[in-house]
Length: 259
Ligand SMILES: C[S@@+](CC[C@H](N)C(=O)[O-])C[C@H]1O[C@@H](n2cnc3c(N)ncnc32)[C@H](O)[C@@H]1O
Image (cartoon, rainbow, N blue to C red; front, side, top):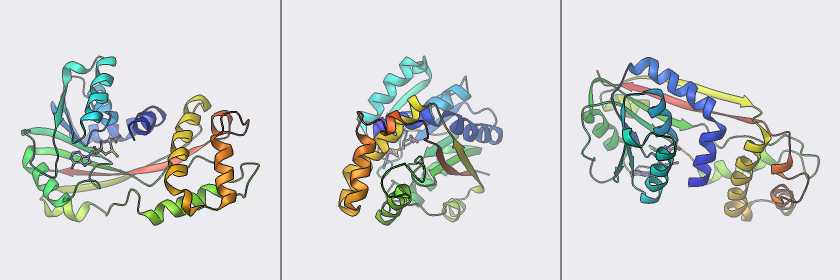
């Protein structure tokens, strides 16, 4: 998961910048920011770089994620403005209040009781403060329809299995945010581009290796053989040797303001 999150940050940096631009336009100049479920710090870093004088509180229940985040912030010269907060949002809200901006990317569908977390978030914001909830619109697409071997449409079949498993499932958060007292705007951000193969190849490799490890029992023998060939670094058709990978996907963002 941590490797995947770091790769996600480097491959989709421009897409993330588009999202933080929009949030920055709505949020003004926040000085006190929290990143809920910060993981390895993709959002924390983007926020610290976007808001150059702000302090960012990176909140996560996993110490291993926070350790990795701490190393990354130090490498990027941001350690003096990023505070690690080890807390489980399902239990007690951490000692954080009078925040100007709260960011929660791909984390609200993990908490046990989102309504409680939204109410906690509302209480921790200053009036006029902004809560940005970000969710990925499913697993990114990256394979061509026809790989030149195997049955065409492998990615569509993989997506069907993933959807069936309920991975990354979340509701439209707007009703629960409104019930907590927020005024909500919603926007979709999409991307469709061919990043440098040396960057997208390893990213696609990690994603497909996760699929191979987790879903092998639900894919046909032919598709598994195709996946193995794509993961075999000595194969010229492998993901890390291909030049035809195109990343397609998107994110939904709910910008919720405390009146
Ligand atoms: C899919 S990751 C997203 C990480 C990061 N926001 C990003 O966009 O790359 C979800 C993160 O939420 C954290 N998380 C899940 N449940 C949590 C909870 N109850 N309290 C605090 N953090 C939680 C996980 O440890 C994980 O780091």
